Image (cartoon, rainbow, N blue to C red; front, side, top):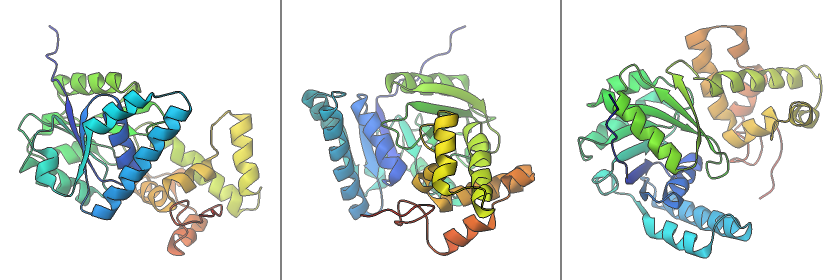
Length: 290
């Protein structure tokens, strides 16, 4: 018997940071009516500026037309009012910081204002979707939608099924992914899923090699980029993601799975303590000007 499709036309994205504004851009350019929520009006203004710049770059590269840009901006709005953001949403995607208590609270607040039929999706790269689902009023309509940075360039979408996720919810999210032009992989809920579990091991080993003086950061990254055809080396990628985010994921996986491969090197801890978090702070394994 075919699974009944839940139609998604309106999406709310929670959090206007690195991932949130990118997810909102993808949603709007894919034809979804999109609301981007953040408590910080300044963050929302910066998100608008980034999206406008990204759309201009896409036009210059021939990937979008001016008409596409106009349609996307017509579909897109920002707000500091959570009720306004989620009141008509068919799908709510949270992209708040990688702390389970923040994500649970975000979903609890959404439940006060969102339609009963709305699907709750988390962009977490490692936390338990099953635990997040259990903390909501709609566990069957909770799922993981793990986008990759930057979402408007990297087309991969990792769909994570909670123990409670219904076939109808999964079918709806696969439909959203198709409309967004995503290449989807579907995984069961497990610490780190597939991508973070593999990616963190490579990144932490690269850090240990740097710590031990095996090679420079640039040479380690070049070896992976050219030898294994990765578009970005593990240390550059960590700078892009954020060293604090990598550390949080590593600590979570070490606690959940054990194994020295998930034990964060002291080098990573020292850099995070020093506030050297990667691109967002101007320095991580590399230095960034401007």
